Image (cartoon, rainbow, N blue to C red):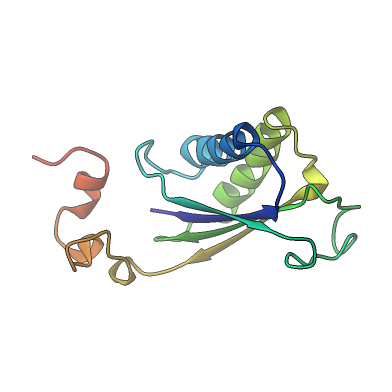
Length: 139
């Protein structure tokens, strides 16, 4: 049940932002075992000087089109799954909205299920049957 924070410099069109949102979500659905309806994201747009990143550290050169995806996931994924996700995300974000791979940074952090509340003041993911309900298979 990932929550995605998307950080980039201010100035992109609503269509660009939607394409970023759609592409990262599609990559999660295709490779990260995320249900299609499980979409929780926030986009942070920053003024110059408020999003600070090294132009060349461990990749690059980066440009002002740099986007940071900070993903908090409710369960760990295997190394193979994470690597497939990183690759697919770069492919999809490259296709739409056209972000270069050097400008994509993804950080995945995992938490335990009882650290999430989707509402009603409950830790839904610690209740019996939560996985089936999340997938729409509740009886």
